[in-house]
Length: 276
Image 1 (cartoon, rainbow, N blue to C red):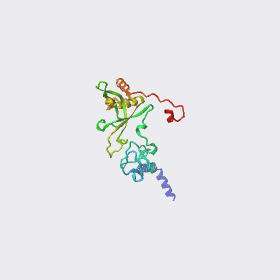
Image 2 (image 1 turned 90 degrees about the horizontal axis):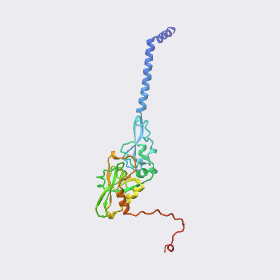
Image 3 (image 1 turned 180 degrees about the vertical axis):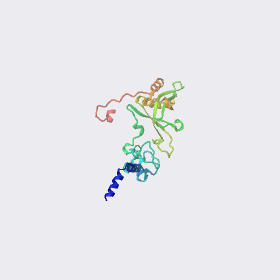
């Protein structure tokens, strides 16, 4: 027994032995750590996915949701991927988002019903109001004007001598939405062709009033014509700007300004006798 103990002590005291054992220990630690790291990113995670293509503004029902196992590395560290059915079921796709078939669900693509606000209304700045410009496939250049594009609005009409006048009335107008005759967004459904009926954009109140006056100048064959502009010409985040005082004066001269409505101080309800 003593001989065995003495031999073991000599073996462990040998520098070569210590080096070999130390190397083996380090290799073992590295191997365990490597496998643990691989397992942490390759172990499958069960996540929901879209069984069908889901169009914008669509309520997500149970038959639209499937499940697949994906490597955890695909979703680890991403807070945008929804992994719980409760965060998806009976909610809606965003107003400007299509969820493709077999796609995972992402936070920005799924909203609750109360958030189904029209994208155009949601982008109104202080002091701006919406204006809807009637258009057609022809005046949108073959349905090639998209939300986010910028354009200038030109005014065409006859003047008092029946001559044609044409010029830029408003510049730097950003399109917020393109809708069909039923008020549906033209570009929100990839499986259905929709004909553009109106361009919606936001302008300051004074320009909005001027444009609406121009629309009603039917006796002068007035038209508002959208003209797309180059991206390099866009003044981003700047409001629309009046470009022609001459045309504005013409439009205002052919219309009447309505005075501010007086506040009624009397609570008495008008009767037939009062108006006689």
